[in-house]
Length: 410
Ligand code: AMP
Image (tube, rainbow, N blue to C red):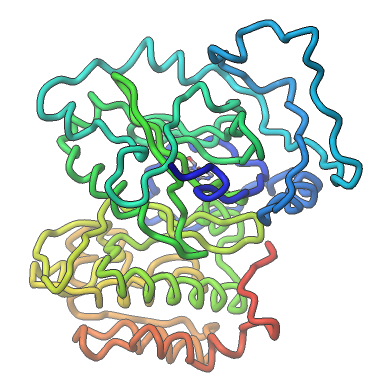
């Protein structure tokens, strides 16, 4: 059995507010919103971002909820005082995981029914019995639950800390089985989980483990300390070319990794990207991914703004759909809206994509302009390969000397 130390990595925290509406306003450019608080928290927590080989006991936050386990419910033995920390152990401040609002229990009463039969089998997802790299067995009682991070279609996401040493910080995402069945996405969810649990890349959100009970599935996700990239884009309207180039560099690297594993993402867009504590980009949603070793797919999926001509025209497509999406993303980072967006509706957007009706504003530098044009090619085979994207002068010119792609919020 794999220990938690082998399975998980410590990811640190910053404030993330809940997401009241995941739907993106059509045609809206990114509006400025008040800036996030918690910069000091960020500084403190970044100390916990790196795995600590000798973790000292971390004080429990008083505000978080501890769901009692069989062992923690027992009164502490008066004869057994906890051993003092070794003299050399560094003193670490507690990470405040915030106040739990009881959302898991509230939801569990009001939504979700048990599922039976084949669907129940499909959704009996448990990483401790996974064929490939099984983890230790996990239960909800293994976590202290903190602040809500957001709400997704199938349930809530919370910041949590493992009760066992060394108290890793994670995002725990809950999915209601009956709602998955109602939406007929059992296979898709299963596939998403299977894909994500096998991925290991600094710019791909880790899935450390998963478990289920009668009504719910829980995903133990890497905690993305700076939240959603889309929120940043909304806050700033658009990004500087330096910041955009660094994200593009990280995206190209992550996509190369995914494609080498025969995973086509197919739904690259700012809403599916999260940010780690150092501002590094994390591809975080595998809902539309396909594991496609050598085969080409015909299903239409994803948001229209990011779809390549071959997909809107219902033709076969390959991993080159992600190259196109990277071109759209580059444009949107710099200009604040996707290039083929047409406020008059889907049909108009469709036509603009099919014609590659691309107009790049004059504020865009010639180097960025060149990269966008090279990625947004009608013919998938003519799109710039990802290895070339990483060598492109615009990307190389904005890469930091240390090679670090971390991005400080600007
Ligand atoms: P989702 O169900 O994946 O759409 O998640 C709902 C919201 O929870 C997202 O929009 C994020 O704001 C937040 N969230 C999800 N996963 C994480 C994570 N790993 N780290 C931090 N926040 C997350």
